[in-house]
Amino acid sequence: MNDYQIEINLSSAKKQKPAFDSLEFGKNFTDHMFIMDYTQGRGWHDPRIIPYQPLKLDPSAMVFHYGQSVFEGLKAYLTKDQEVLMFRPYMNMERLNKSNTRLCIPAIDEELAVQALKKLISVDREWVPNVPGTSLYIRPFIISTEPYLGVASSKQFQFIIIMSPVGAYYKEGINPVKIAVQNEYVRAVKGGTGNAKTGGNYASSLKAQEVAEETGYSQVLWLDGKENKYVEEVGSMNIFFKINGEIVTPELNGSILEGVTRNSVIELIKHWNIPLSERRVSIDEIYEAHKRGELEEAFGTGTAAVISPIGEFFWNGEKLCINNGETGQVSKKLYDTLTGIQRGEIDDHFGWIVKVDEETPVISAI
Ligand SMILES: *Cc1c(COP(=O)(O)O)cnc(C)c1O
Picture (cartoon, protein in one colour):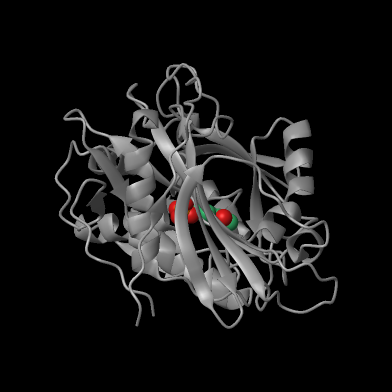
């Protein structure tokens, strides 16, 4: 067991910061990044914070050819008391390792990764935006870097964390979205990589997203890849319905990504004693429930929007309007509670918040 420290090499010049009241998602990056290398035989080594900069990779680096990569997404928030909070970062790092297992990428030390996050955010603390509704979006990712064209798992990797100040998702308050149900393309099948957060899932989803946008819908509702019948996810969010007083969400079936927000919503629903079931739910059932007047709410959950109410579905030529296209009560309460906890305005009874400034224990490598 050897102790290792995160080395810090500060940037000599600070970048000009964008205006925090008109931030676009994922366009501006902070002054520094975290990086760590993996070499077969040595394991993960040299964790360090360096000035934000382009990577130098061999054109034959395996990630360019076979897509062996995984990523995460989480946020840090500035409170009224100028503290910086992260929301459930350990769960993200645990999920990163689950994705790693599926993609044949060596596991990272989850504790080291969270400490790296804390250090990186501290170094770039001025980049945590202070305008209401804004946050610092954090993107940890791992890529295969070995220069080799053989189809096999890479023997070299890089784990990198970059950060981007982002604006309020809803500029004029929480607003329902319109969703097109996808019948032609599928996102994932059981046995595939649907339950891993990997770039390939996104590459294959772009076509359907484009088609949806051309017809005036903002996102795609994915059905299962086998029968084209059961609801899986919406865009890059998990999905929930409220049917006749009960909250229903598709069960984790191997092709659905387990969202941190999904997990948090389930905890809150249970805490509030609202009936909940995680089960298979077909798109027919949703349309039937609507016909009976029992489909009360639908919403997506994900780090970017937190809760995204759904006002309309379009499937097989049939439009379905939910709750008059307005945000439902449970959706609103979930949104207010989750964002309140994330910003330190509501007490965190669940142990979800990790403060960036907390004392960090000495890290030791496996
Ligand atoms: C990241 C992601 C989600 C949402 O996960 P959160 O942890 O809640 O942000 C849902 N579906 C897919 C496909 C995703 O990639």
